[in-house]
Length: 193
Image (cartoon, rainbow, N blue to C red; front, side, top):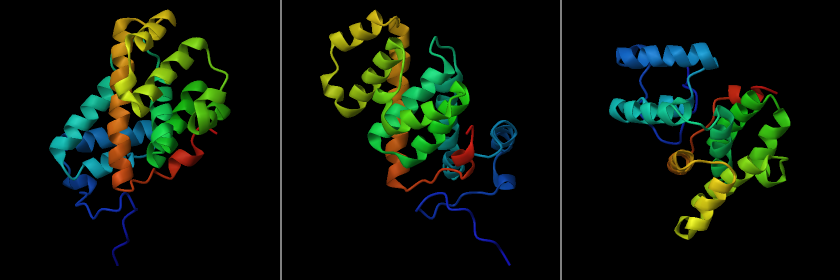
């Protein structure tokens, strides 16, 4: 008897098994399992379209692990603040776990998910998150004073570019995840607690 697949999304997507994936994605998923102990459901969902999986994973990896003066923790904090503003369950859970891991502080991960404004953050990180959330909630109201506030907090114009791209990426992924009821992997819930 064939077992039921784990729930990934509300859509009936033709998600391939690992051995049905092109070799490059079999290797990528093996790396995910080695490093994370799982293949994130967002990647499994995208695997039903190899071209989209390729673009999504390359852009994600460049934004989150590419050359930047933002720390890995700061990038994840942006992901959580944006996802919290958008109430994206998948990304709050997944990236909240990453904040817990990178910070070594389970309470910070929870504060970021609930309301980053109550967390005891350095002025630099607070300015970064204020900008990312304003860009999420009222993008038409971003002005030079907002960019200058980031410069005053110590960010370069390249950093502002990175903050904007990370915030923009998570606004896109939040909307897709919410639209299809994407569920976080159960492992995220207990990670780094």
